Length: 438
Ligand code: EPZ
Image 1 (tube, helix red, strand yellow):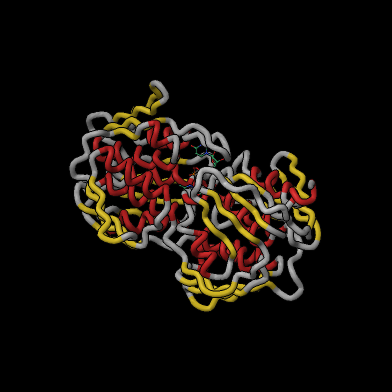
Image 2: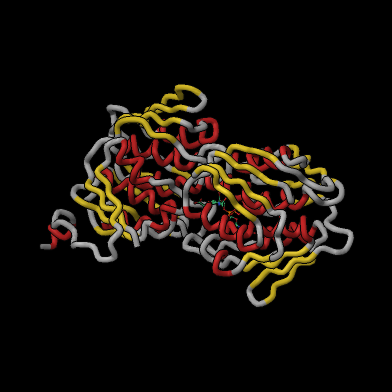
């Protein structure tokens, strides 16, 4: 398994380009199932989850061509298997996004229950309940969700989500495009990725209104056709690089981003002392103020609030801030696993239920740490960039799921970071905690 080796202390200086958003690319790939014609997607991120979704599409019989690395041409004309198997779904829960499209186009679907993951139970009860309200017959069989549509197909309905669900909203919105009549989705998720998916669906001939707001209306149509679409920039990668520029006391120009998609992150980071200039609609300029960082409390919220996917990165930043920060994670029940690894690097963090109490600033010391989930990995990279000595991060396949070549992008702007591919790694140079012990 690949590892990262980081030698801390270099300020991040220069220019970085943001890749397409993984969490928009995934539902847009699933949307290709809704039509027999070809969907062309541009600005696709080169990350593991996209490769997994490609495998799922090919396994069901679709063809995926990549005329160039970041363009996918998907044709679901020859789909024979309406199923997403356990081995795919267990590696990527977003495979559940095949459920709504398969049901809407073919009237049946079998998708393995995703099961939990590192950050929580991750149920899909809201997905299933909303599809049932469109008339689908949904039941569980041997760990799979089996869904069938009665002879007269899915019928539009008024749907109220008890809880905001990003992929739940996406699954339902896609299924509703081919349902008979009108569907109204109340308490819909408002993430930019939902509006991006709706833009693709409307290019395919769907009639979706209100995506990006809490109420989405879908007028069903008989069939959808081909379309071409460019994926929005990744707002979480953008936020991660803002944190990298700030925490290393560097100066970073971030290009090909969409500042309007992360205004809650930008205002919070400005509040703690990060100087962020919105140069234009696709460029940010970042540096840390001379006064350094100051502590601040944070609660994660559904969009447009501060995103849970930036919570771990914010925690690392607060280990360098003057004072006490209380971070409350309201979306997932187990999203503080990065805290114990940061503690091993010298951070003062106390966890109690859904709250992390961070006291700073602390000099972090390089150590051998382990990534546990996608965003926790990013927080450990940020810590390694400033830690004294060398940090080794194991299991970086987690970070490869959602960040395109993060070590190459960081190296470009001055970080001392390498990817180590060998299975056995030489012991750490005795500078970190080991040195203290020795
Ligand atoms: C999406 O996950 C993202 N993934 C996640 O990004 C992101 O953290 C999350 O939204 C929240 O913003 C993709 O878009 C592929 P939810 P999703 O359904 O849709 C509960 C990353 O790092 N819930 O909005 O799975 C759920 O347990 C990933 O890129 C139910 O109870 O999240 C959670 O507590 C991690 N029943 C809350 O709702 C359901 O049927 C929000 O989950 C569905 C969700």
